[in-house]
Length: 233
Image 1 (cartoon, rainbow, N blue to C red):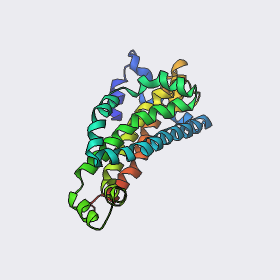
Image 2 (image 1 turned 120 degrees about the vertical axis):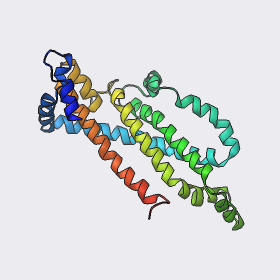
Image 3 (image 1 turned 90 degrees about the vertical axis):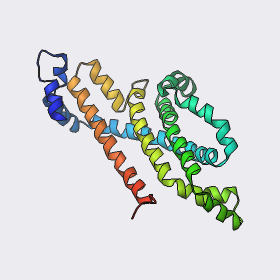
Image 4 (image 1 turned 180 degrees about the vertical axis):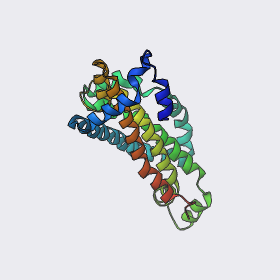
């Protein structure tokens, strides 16, 4: 990848030359020594995980209910499919009107983008759960609440975590442009700031940092999915 990157940016006459890896890695070293980077990383991670927490708190219960109750699934299917096809960033004016300028709209945009993978994966897992487990629970007097809590939630956990993993990827996609809209901190804001002063090497350095953070934040979820998987030996 680095070789391809270097080949595409090797020509000094090309507009891509200002994104070349040598200048980028030098800028990366400068940023590592800059306290502003760590403040930006902290702000971005706080907004990202805050939005994901909101999405999970909304998406998991809705996914369980819509997957378990046939009528709920039929009622919500078309509205959910309609809503999830709307670009999360198109909600920006609504988010700003409701929550004002600052971190609030960023949380809103991440949550509205991340909630759909969680709902869909959770509902699909509930639908796919072995119906014999539910019948056995019914024989022991379990109601809908007990079935959802003690059987379907546990059975759906690998898919729920997979939905959160997908939501994490969506969150990283949304948070960078979201932080370019009305906030003065975070990695997205830093990219915009460096672009405005034509420091393209630093722009690429921040992009590399975002990719690295995305990889690091994905590792615990991959481990958790493997740990709770029914196929784990």
